[in-house]
Image (cartoon, rainbow, N blue to C red; front, side, top):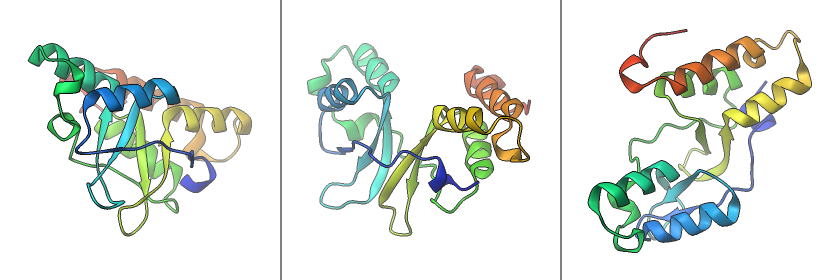
Length: 158
């Protein structure tokens, strides 16, 4: 199965120059926990921002979210997949990098969707135990277990 068969295509984004308060508002409005970050002046994705990033930045800096720029906090080491990648490839990347959601980009690093572990699990449930190895429930459980480990334990492969 390919990423394009499972990914979510309607994805909200923020700009690197916006504040954390804008990201938090958008996450609340869209009921999501992370957003792709677009480069200012283009459609190119340059990072990801999570609700945890927002919480930790405001706490550790003792500043309101409106006073902190997304570019100061976002993860700029961008891990992504393409829509033609296999779901198993995406899941392996999610497991090794401990990420729950991964942007799906085209050749120009423009967003075409996002793939979450929830998308994979939901699709897996509809397929059951079919021969699709990349959607096997045991594989999804192993990925979730690794993502939830404290980072110092993340290197261990389940």
